[in-house]
Length: 268
Ligand SMILES: Nc1ncnc2c1ncn2[C@@H]1O[C@H](COP(=O)(O)OP(=O)(O)OP(=O)(O)O)[C@@H](O)[C@H]1O
Image 1 (cartoon, rainbow, N blue to C red):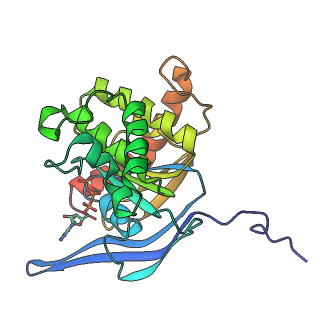
Image 2: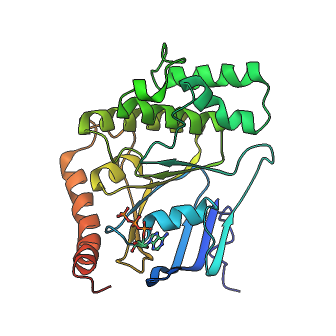
């Protein structure tokens, strides 16, 4: 009998099969995703890159249960019934302007019914991890963009979801702040080894963060190819040999560039 090649594999954390999504409005229909197949392993850091408008956010929202697909199935394996399955971090921070930093970070825990003292203790711990000590009582309007994003990250980690969905969380930030936050995110991920699905436009960022990178096609998007990032961690600028970084960048760009062109010429 032929050996079953899947027999030894552990179950994936996320399985997406044949998923399609079309937005319908008065002005017409937009087919955002078509026939998406994706498998993300437990504790994996999976990055998604793709041309603008190819359906990356749509896919993430489907994974987060914020949207329903038209066709196909999405399965997210859940372990602990007491923990939220997914948690999203968006580019536009998603924090409440009328709540203080500590109340923003503790918000999800409050929703889960965690007692006040315990949720504040957890919130303080994560506020410390993202270097916002002393800002517990500040309000979002008193913080810079990078600080607001750190509040969002602290909140997501404090919620302790099994899967972390990040939609270009550092897209609006300057390169220095972004580099710093990427390091902080990696540190937190290392400590907690959550499963992360991370959408970015930035190939170098995807290489620094991802165990694997899924390249999406022009709209209607699908996962065109998955590329292994065969680099040891940590992957700071001084740690990754430049020629290996270049080779990976070229490899990803060669898969992506045709899609970007197709998407810019509206031939998708
Ligand atoms: N609510 C909506 N109603 C109608 N069309 C939508 C809606 N949301 C997204 N779309 C369309 O679906 C397509 C995919 O959008 P989506 O935001 O998922 O792409 P994206 O890859 O995340 O884009 P970007 O990289 O520019 O952020 C786009 O053509 C977009 O205009």
